[in-house]
Length: 599
Image 1 (cartoon, rainbow, N blue to C red):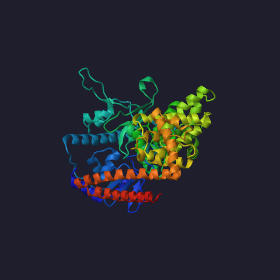
Image 2: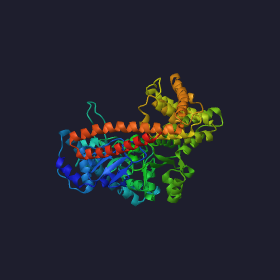
Image 3: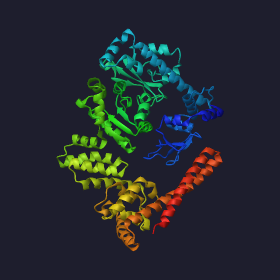
Image 4: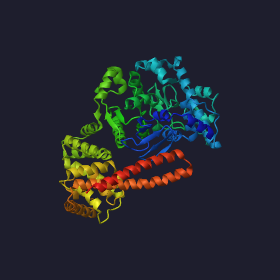
């Protein structure tokens, strides 16, 4: 696509409207801020600059213009991003230009595949009205699927015919497109060539799967017969150039507005669960389409909300899937709860039999993920015996270890220990051991401690340092980048990750570390007494010094990045980096003044 058209679009675009479709924006002076979609964070460091139609994250330093943002969020090429932004803004598209024949062929194939899936959707919809589809219509009526639902979700019927759809679609699409679509199957010939195509979906009710923009890219099809010849109950499209099952969330195209508005999503397993809830009024529902939840889906959902209510089937398969999904979401900082429905019903049947009000009540009573997992451990293992307690603890520990927040992690461990009848110290010890395992990739601490390291280690391990410990652990847990350069970073991480140890030397992974901790315990106290300062005051000074060093490192990075942006002629990025440099310098001067005033 010509550069002049991209510049025309950029000049007319409202970047807040485009980015606002992906993120929840907050006004910040003349600009906007949000939680960055490119890295984990709890406070918004992502800034949007409407005047230059650009963005910058002060946390991970991702930056660019509106096209860069759409490219990264939708995983598409630059020409596709320009077209997408133009279409969103209602700007007419010129005749498309390509950088290479390969790019032209790939883009053409994708467009043809979109068109083929739209044609297939219409074909299935028309067949649902045929005499052959009477049984399919009866089935949907028995499941409470109304004509309005059929129309809204474009549900159709694949006839019991091998050749009809191929003959219809071959009038408009080449064999290459039809074979790449996933709509057809064929047998390989003896000479290695592909045989005649035949319809993949036959005698099945079809449910279109759409991408985030609402374009049909695949299908799920339910068999009407249950004999061995009919194949699986549900058959999905294979992966194609359009469709990767782990990158799609069913109904996200319809639900994303409600998810953003309510800042919450209801996650279910199957399409019918999502369809029934959506038509009953639960507009923020999405489904995994019966596949395992993936990291790509976690990131996709995280663009719209960090609050998710899981409502998976109550059988073992559903509960196992819930456990794995919880693990990924907790690791990514999601607030997650688990919905349990009376009678072991799935969401589809529950809302049809009990009504949407009863379902809403079940959502309000959803259990915290920690309570759900503890109850799951109690259900799986008889905690009245020592063996059962060990198994229950081993079941929970991987989940506890994944929690990024130290306070939440300790609270979960204490709660689990109490409910399982396990000694709290034993659970804490297990958490520390897990943190110690992360030391394997960290270089061994040097034999000699700096005064700053002595202060921090003393605060984290001394028995009477409650105030100093809380200050140090809270600050360091929130800013691991402050101490990452220290030789004792591994030890500090272990101490910050777990609760205050009863015996500090127990947390040391080796003899050298135990010597360092013993030294810190003695020299830290001596320094506090000799300097006539409390340990709390010393920790404040140490944290300020760490923060200053981090700002100085960032200052050096900014000088290099400003130079690079200048050489590229990127004036907008130069301006943003200069703004950050100014903010960084002001904070650095403020901290240096405070540190100089401290006795």
